[in-house]
Length: 430
Image (tube, rainbow, N blue to C red; front, side, top):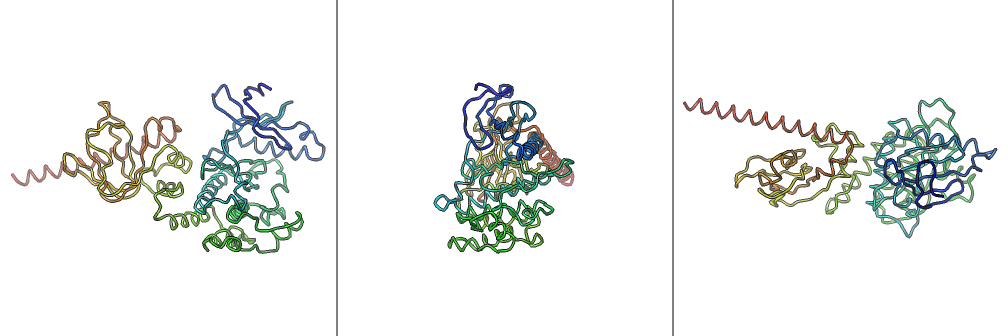
């Protein structure tokens, strides 16, 4: 098979009971994609075909709707022809399923960071009116050490959709009590499922062990699971608390918002990594969200900033930029303070949220730095290469331009104030 529709088939990369997944090439956008070709026999099955087609239509309806760095994008879908297929973002990596085994558990910091990113992605989906309904390790792709992509939104519940939703979908071990009972669902059902997922990643086992689905369902509805620390003695009590709250059977006692869930995971990371050199994405995201420079960026654009930037921790009195050197990257100060120095004289002191080094980026007269920039305290700086920024989304670039304009106006205002003060002083001397 050389092609399916307009897509050129490169190779088969996966096969399941209902579909075959190919690595393909989109010749129009010149990018690699994952193409899932569905077995026509499944769609024609009298008993299950209708429900299965409904699930496919649900996921296909999300094409172009969910645009988040931690959600697999759906680009295209054909579900009304002889060949039924869906075209998605191609991700290199495996699911989290393998890391739910005792011998392949991830570090606690990695698990917390993965959980945090899942919270933010599912919070975004909630704001788009989408509840996933099938969160589990097999539906979360791991890219690199801790970057993730949530996939398989076929079981999703879409708010304000007139068509009948398929009920009874999901994996019993990860389903919330209200989902098992076909009750009214909200984002809190995904919170419960993510709690079970974290339990599995932390311990290498599910919170409920059952010989069959009937036993599993009974336990989900009636039995409190053992604390994760029961099976992993080195687990800090905070993880017991986080997982227990996410998995509360009573939704009034469960996390009410994704922000609450994410905040607890972030607090654990901040407390556990104070002395580490590595800056985790969780801290990066919370940092940029609090900086004035990024005040107009939404969460999706902030994740994009993390993707295109490099972060550096620099000791006090170390030079960041040297006067006269070549360079065109610009920097945003994330933590600490720096001195702007010209020929040994301190011109200014900058604090978190300030930008420096951007003049060579905007200048038409070369790329030589005009001042020294020296760390006054230990600092964390965000470095951005303009050539990489140029490849980012139009909204991201627009917000950078607006931030630069705000900084320029602020600096001109400060300069005018200094000039007026100097003139007033000169007048007083006369």
